[in-house]
Image (tube, rainbow, N blue to C red; front, side, top):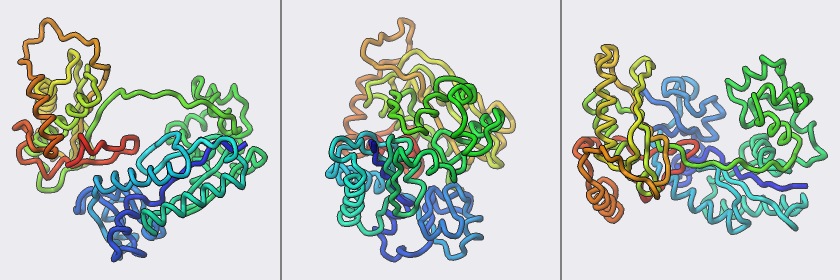
Length: 409
């Protein structure tokens, strides 16, 4: 029985750029965070991928692999807007069960849509409507299978613009030719764990019993994986927001600690606004700095539950100053900064600390949020972010689609 249809957009960021800029069509394109020789591609067009350029390929290597490549600075707001339009189009064919990332979503097939012919007809209709309403450059690969895990796997088996169906009768043979890391959930560390347990090939993985996979995964996830690769309908595990994070790769002209702190302040203010918009408070704050040469330094602290920008900014500043006590950090050139608000809990029912001596800025935060929502983010901001308005721009993480209300530039 077919239960899932998975939609995976091809070279999404680059395809959007090619759709909006006809002069880029048919040419190798790499989308980068900024136009600089020290950055890397966050997306590559179908044409660029044919030369070996892919996500995280640095600019120098991309030029070596493909001398004709065109670098385009990313436009996160545009990609989110296209994503929202794509969702509406897919929803016009069938309800979306889950949006997994900005370029991936899946549909739970039910009733008359479960037979192969009906599911394939739906897939072709989705492709047609996306091309008609979003544009000819916006293509997707679609996988159809007994569960969303196998449907995702199928969507990766024929790119670009593919359509692959895996039925129960096709298992396990349809998977035998895949590499172990082609399966969702098997990254570098998990691959090593499998190797340590004597599993080095996909046939060995598919032939392993449930006890061996429980042992390899270290618990119930191994059993869940065993069930999923056999086409069983395994319930999705519930997730909840546990943290809010932002990071930014610094442009060459702001790779000093003063500018880095200003950009970190802007990222922090954006995170604090998201915190309040979600009605959460944070109980832990962490920052990270990546220096030229790749050296990373981190610092974190626990705090009383808060959603106040002033309190969070003060903590971030203290953490940065603590890192500067290290000579290698102080004398180094910051290449990237990031921050995380962790230990999130709902604000409802939270009581403030009796020993909190910080000024009550709740009303100020509310006014700043309202003005930024009405007139655009960065209409009002705390002084620590002065001079950073062109930096710390909205970015799209693999597991987080920005909310244009609170995160747009």
